Length: 206
Ligand SMILES: Cc1cc2nc3c(=O)[nH]c(=O)nc-3n(C[C@H](O)[C@H](O)[C@H](O)COP(=O)(O)O)c2cc1C
Image (cartoon, rainbow, N blue to C red; front, top):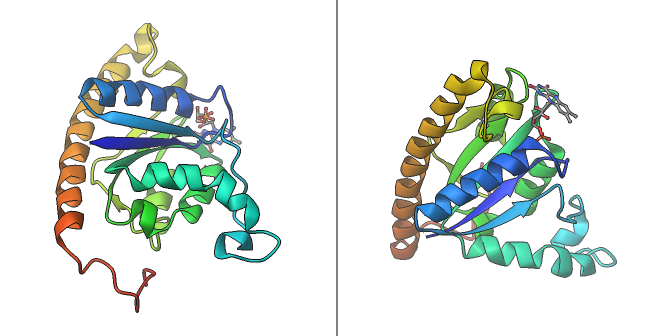
């Protein structure tokens, strides 16, 4: 399968990008091809009416969005790695989920990973699972991963007091990815065979 990862940190040195790259390596080791869109280093403007064709605003979108849209369209599933900022999903990540339509994400499996340097991480799960997929129609898998104490997780030598949590998260990641692959495969088969997933009368979720 082809899997795209989107990492939502605003910081090029953020943990979300680092953990996203760790997960990407694991996905490749599992035999899949990948793309990674790191929003900290990707020049992607915030949504404006040019996305819907407004004159004077639309021209830039073909250049800045189309390459990412094409990558997402050919993907069988997506992994979203989202930092917790003040109890919220990051603005850049919400922006990309707003830019994505069902053409990019519709009826595809999405594995959500949230990242907190403290003991947070649950708020962005609640936010994104409840409020971010109405129109793009991404299907979150039931298994998400919350990475707390992120500075010390998925590192080469976690300090002794974090070693147990790090080992737990590594093993839980392997399990959650296995679940994600099964959903991605099943939904890819479903998209291929069923012409009833789209109706021009109801392009957006209710
Ligand atoms: C603007 C901002 C707000 C943050 N707010 C929270 C927070 O509310 N709760 C929390 O656990 N961590 C918070 N953090 C720490 C991040 O969770 C931490 O940096 C983590 O590594 C994920 O972000 P990163 O990918 O940018 O590194 C915040 C970080 C930033 C930059």
